[in-house]
Length: 76
Image (cartoon, rainbow, N blue to C red; front, side):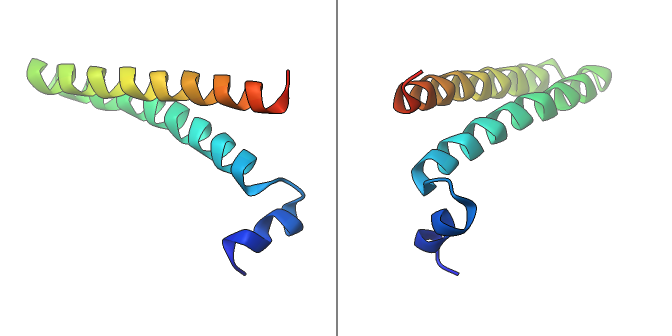
């Protein structure tokens, strides 16, 4: 099945699904980064912990931007 056919199967337009998937992935990544931050801190590697904090911040930002875009497109 091609990507263009998936909307017919799921009943959700591909572009809307893609935004939803993106937001979920960003939020999931932000949660994962929390584990990586903790691991780096426990290993005494503050540089790596800071790197993961920045990555976590970018994931949160992506999720917020995706949610705003989805909200605007769904007219709510």
